[in-house]
Length: 279
Image (cartoon, rainbow, N blue to C red; front, side):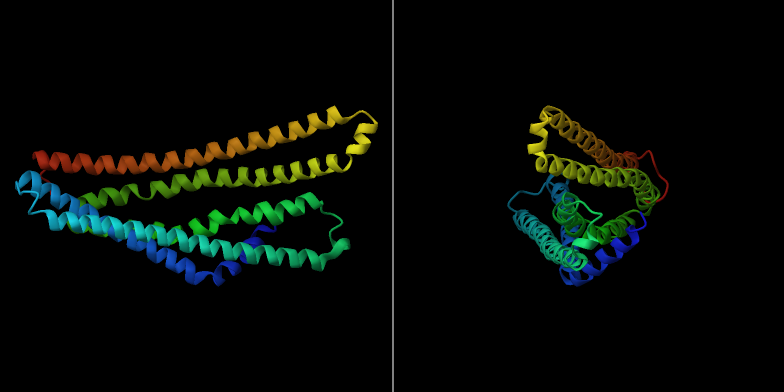
């Protein structure tokens, strides 16, 4: 826990080098968001023109071509966001692994006497690879999670300020409850990393001492111990996954509530039951 601020500062320093690629990923995400809004607006206009105004498909062909073009732009922007994030993640992981190996080399055998080789290998390989999602997705998404909702809120407020007010009231509930779930997931994820480090040490020790275990007839007991450690890691992984799915469920629930409130308001407004405000 005491080393967590140092690790975050080290990771932030590595991420600053990849700022241009991460900025490109954010820009592509914003382009994808704008394309989605334009696509939905054009689709709504097409439905209205086709079903309400009774226009023919021949008249709507330019709009349909524009809709197909927006779909292509959105797909290209999403590909650019993913490719830029993955490129930044790959370069950062290479740099992180190189710095860790240099640090281990500087410590030497004397400085590493209190650390098991399996734990060190697990940190250099597995835990560095675990940075992929953090760099490629989380870092760009933390800006998009602010920019895209504000963009949507601005468009909705321009169309109907009361619907925007409903969305604004529901918006704080999503990060609040996801943060509560995320704090529990962080603790379980830390325990999971500790468990896999213990499992690595346990397995390497048994492999190194296989001749001694065979000599004293303890191979079955050692196999059972490794199996128990692996089962403990499996249980911890499943607990972490359960919390991760709970986080997604919280997001989906409050998003569905916000959409349902706006849909009810718009529906009753169209039926003439609501006369307050823009309705």
